[in-house]
Image 1 (tube, rainbow, N blue to C red):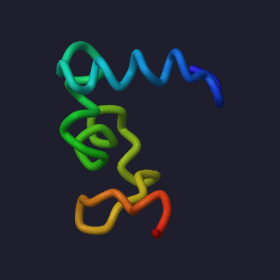
Image 2 (image 1 turned 30 degrees about the vertical axis):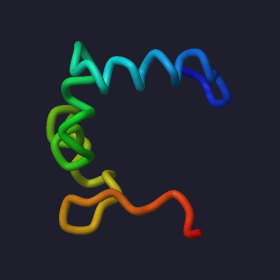
Image 3 (image 1 turned 90 degrees about the horizontal axis):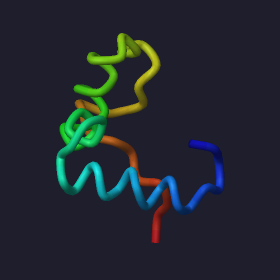
Image 4 (image 1 turned 180 degrees about the vertical axis):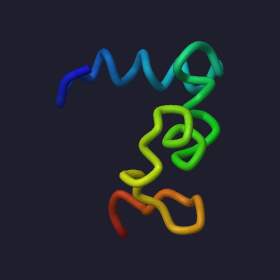
Length: 56
């Protein structure tokens, strides 16, 4: 998946919503995904919650 690839983003969102393959892991949140991929020291979260991408 590369930056700006809307088609790939749509496929990934479908996998997450269907909880299939990689989507199963990502649907459980950043803390879980970071643990699965051995990236716990790089995951951005506060008490397991992902920060908002923007503030309205």
